[in-house]
Amino acid sequence: MRIAMLGFGSVGRGIAEAVSEKDLGLSITAVADSRSGIIDADGIDIRDVLERKRTTGLCGTPGITAEDVIESGVYDVLVEVTPTNADSAEPALGYITCALTAGRHVVTSNKGPVALRYDALMQLAVSRNVQLRYEATVCGAIPLIQALEIGLAGNTITALNGVFNGTCNYILTRMTDEGLSYSQALLEARELGYAEADPTYDVKGIDAAIKLVILANSIWGLNVSLDDVDITGIDGLTTDALALAEDLDCTIRLIGEIIPEKRILKVSPRVLSKDHSLVVRDTLNAVTVETDMAGEITLIGRGAGSRETASAIIADILFIRDCYVERT
Ligand SMILES: NC(=O)c1ccc[n+]([C@@H]2O[C@H](COP(=O)([O-])OP(=O)(O)OC[C@H]3O[C@@H](n4cnc5c(N)ncnc54)[C@H](OP(=O)(O)O)[C@@H]3O)[C@@H](O)[C@H]2O)c1
Image (tube, rainbow, N blue to C red; front, side, top):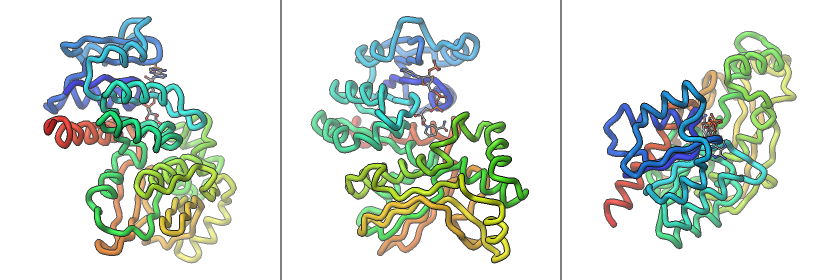
């Protein structure tokens, strides 16, 4: 199966490394980053591309763009792993729209297009008889969307609660363990590369809320936007609040919640007993799904990282190959 890739940063390189190391039956035929690109219908030597990116900062030839890659047509699946723009979703939205319109499958880790334009993109994909998959947009390596769509098919999901943001979870873990203030823990998270230079989206709960919107629209068809989520972040939390929780043998975690039937979507810091299944450490993510038949199921895993996110992307690509391409 032929893959074209837009974006060759942390996630893109993770995918390239996995494809070059493992015998997955995938061939990368085109790649673009923000300043260069490379296209070869016979398959690119991806180790060369990784080395060039590492030494020069470019994956290919300057002047070859993402648009050239999309228009080249030398691929079955477009893997879209450019930066998230939560306001307009561009330029990723345009890239994904062009590839779907041209009858190509798309796999993305980019929350913007899926959160803002899920219905329109899905309608387009259906009209062209192709797949749009986005497992990596929610909880990185955790196969949550597969579990909700396939593993729990036939169940009524009454509630979904989870830790959706590893940066906040790291900050809360450090505030509890070491008694650090919010600003000290945030500084540490930045130094370790867990928090962006501008951590607003994470600490104000917006990143977690975007993930709830993706789930609400794609799993339950609730047709909601960020405005429908009741959001409180962790930026107002004091060490006193955590100490108070500690006195009760509890701790605090930033929890995203969906109650589909009532259309409730909420992100807020919650006091949880220390042995609660959602009290995970450091940058881990965790999600508990409450169902009528399967009971309660909790998935815990890495919500971010180069290789971890590549895991979700590759699973989506192989799902398309095994379920759609080989049958047609
Ligand atoms: N990192 C994670 O753990 C993780 C987890 C889940 C989801 N995601 C999502 O996955 C996406 C990629 O994340 P990342 O961490 O890999 O980001 P990143 O390290 O910043 O890499 C982004 C890549 O996109 C390229 N790019 C930027 N604008 C472009 C354009 N217009 N056309 C083509 N390429 C363009 C950049 O080019 P240059 O190399 O030239 O700068 C870079 O190669 C984001 O949407 C992110 O939110 C990331």
